Image 1: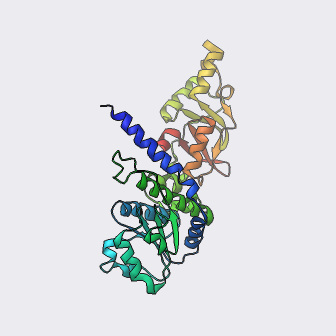
Image 2 (image 1 turned 135 degrees about the vertical axis):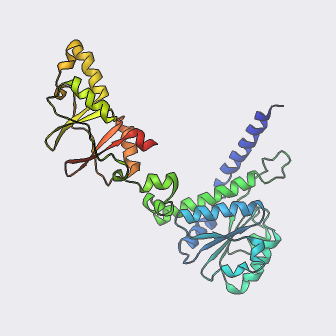
Image 3 (image 1 turned 120 degrees about the vertical axis):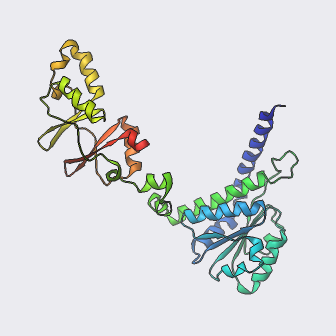
Length: 314
């Protein structure tokens, strides 16, 4: 049995299902984006079974990207939780067949409240599509399941269409990284977007070396600093930095005389500096672009810290 062949076929089928969604984007999709953009309440997402799981993910994605959204369990809705839906909300219903009984019963219960209903189904002539204010078609040719029964391609397509909706709304709202950070204060996302240089920089015991110091003596200071560099200073003025790489190049150039070379002849002048208010994402990009492992942090020309690449990446 070659399970890899079966897995490849599944992935190809699902990938094709996603590509097939592009021609299905029509005026209805644009109207739904406009409707949600101007909504003053919440997008209440619901579905049954696998569509319910997809709905929960779509609601979470919308909420984290600037669109107030909640997930409502369809069965609970029929037993009292319809009271969660306010008159300024939008109901977003997901069903591949478009004929899910529980969702149709919810529509019947909301008729007198005139709440906009958006349905996303795989059939444009389904009952759900016919009784919705707006309908998003999300059709797949077949399921990736070898029996063409288990929801596979259809759930992948629905998830992707939900992402497409969220991304379109992000663009319309001009939702940016700083907005995203407000909704993701925890974990690695929050750290990347909210943490600033001042939160992670070294602030004491700087490895300071004077420009006239011999390289042999500078090596001792650099080693004790454990940052792989020394900051070359005269008084409060930053003249440059001396790194392990600078010393290796000095050794190659001067050979046996390198020990007596002054730091000023081997140092890197005008080193890269950064403000303590700079975001973590910016300094990570600087490390990559300039292929350096440390940055000096300055405030009005005064050394206030050092940022180390390995500390940031960890």
